[in-house]
Length: 475
Ligand code: PEP
Ligand code: MN
Image (cartoon, rainbow, N blue to C red; front, side):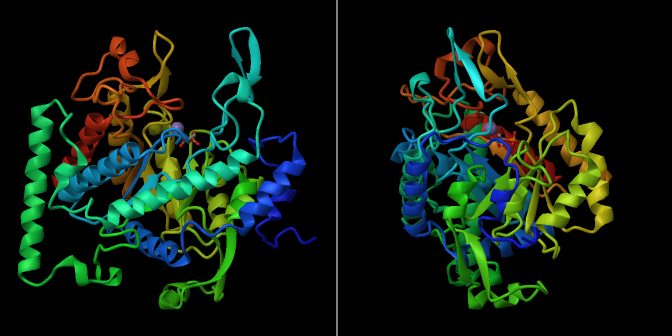
């Protein structure tokens, strides 16, 4: 078999890092057969719309916000949690729009972000050595439920569907309207300074919006080609994403569709474009994790054939020439906005690696989007044994990225963050990361620590980051 012919299953002939071994193969096949018959979660035209908008990000005409949970859980699929997540993403983007003065493209880590890569296949719990928890779509957090169960993939499909349905209904019911941003819940924000600053911005933006309506430039009637912001999921654009880790699942939701004709002009920018393409219909955007980006591996093979825009995590072990070879594989036609590089080195390593990566990509001529993930290289364990991150360290990596891009004649086009608007039962924000304007201390971490995966910035800490970005660009 010629090795360079891509099909949705050609990844199967390559080694897959972070592979999950299912003891019951028959059940796995049955589940995958079922998923293959289920309807797509997202449509080709929505994916094309994101491709177009990411082209604008790549050309520095828009800013990308990629944010959400490290991992979603089935239990957290509730109205309150989903509304809190969307509310925070909207609040964050509003602050960024204010300072950056460009549209913000919002991609949530939501409606399918269940699978997790792990540094070790097993872990010790008490006296027992058990398989590591790999995310709700694989096995259970409970040490007695660690055997991978294919039915969880079906559950993941339906929880993604329920989440996406609720996101769509929130965004088409006025939830995102600038006229009542207070619905996004600022009541629990204790810092008056943070609350006042946010209110000042929303009032300013509401006035601006009113003004454009008055002079007949309201956003509602505009198509997105004209720069309007009314999107497929409602009155603002919002897109979904997850790490494309479980390739069996991704393959089962990969469908061949005609490229929507109204978008043919975008397709024509690619010389090899055909009228049909393979879309991963489980999310608008998928990314390859730092542990599964081997050039000859299964994940890179799968990702090179889908039409969705994709992300690639870039950590300190990535060699500059390896990065360029990876881009050649996943974006041979050099389409603008197709690939987002999500850099995540750690505050102490960003100086050693980022400039080399930027220069190698510049020399290659590949049109990439650069965004900073200042979370994943900065995880530490607190004295009490909780996984945490320090706000100051996160900011240090982010500001280094802004500076290094400027020094290299490049641009930071966005950020990728793990944050949550979720509140604990007592109505206060979660306490998973240290510092920020609320000055969260180490002894306060256990108070409202809710993540079962990586620690997330809470509502106030996330807004702190938004103001920092906003202020940086306002200058
Ligand atoms: C993540 O984004 O949650 C993650 C596991 O990231 P990385 O692949 O960069 O470690
Ligand atoms: Mn994470």
